[in-house]
Image (cartoon, rainbow, N blue to C red; front, top):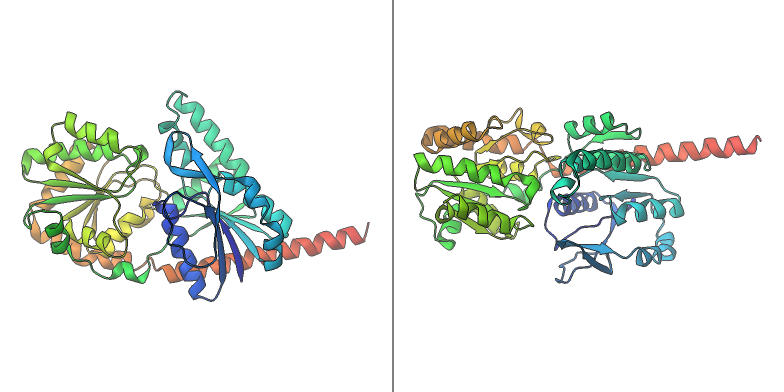
Length: 398
């Protein structure tokens, strides 16, 4: 099968969408499919694999991490793309990539699939604060419905997101298909090595957050929770691993709340080596995002045997509701802090959760998810061909 993917983000821009695309591409290629990716160029040099087309791009106002592809440069690819005989276009993001992807699919006469990665109604108001939240929610829902109904099929990373899209009024078929974990994510890291490298005492109780450092990730909640936890465990440490637009705000918050000496900010880590060590170094992985459409970092932590303490919203429900290596808590700072303190003080309970955690993650195989995606592609392609045949027959009888 020949698949054309298009996205407004990809590595070296690090986020869940980039990770999802890379995971699916690798696994689809291993299954024998050809997967071309159209993505923005970045100032930083990208260590690309084969069959990635980088598009000249420009900066995005108020968002130094992202780039906006030049639509004209994408359109100029059409003659070359037509020669490749693609079977389907898979759109990964809702900005330039969406509109360019729909146009390319129409010109190539192939169906479109789009993955809905981001819960925009709980996302946009963080970045457009002057507009009332209710207005941004309305805009996000109308924008989402319009885009989703413009493609043949939607991929939702979680059941909760599928339900939300249906409630919005999306008419396109929606399939739930999360991103799985690649086999190397189960290769155990070395937590002692990470602690030594970052001068963290081997016995220091350590809470860990990994992910984009963004406002919608609700990291403020974790900081306030951690302040309460310090009252019971004064030598505890909170590691915040990642980068993003909320970094300056969070550094000021930890200063204002008086916990700066007990919070360590660490930037992006190489996924296949130091990040695995980082997960292993934590006594607990803590998470409180309300906007996740899946929550890959939860799976990554569980795969490394790091017990999770988390609230459960949207896509995290699919990961956590049957997990044995996690403690699900109420969306309440005191309750969350009490659960974290209890586990930090109970080594036997942590050990039980740690032993069970990898089996929770093992249910999310990247290869199985890629096989399901390839079947979804085939169904979508067959449906388009059947529709085209019906259209041709109807035209012939008029």
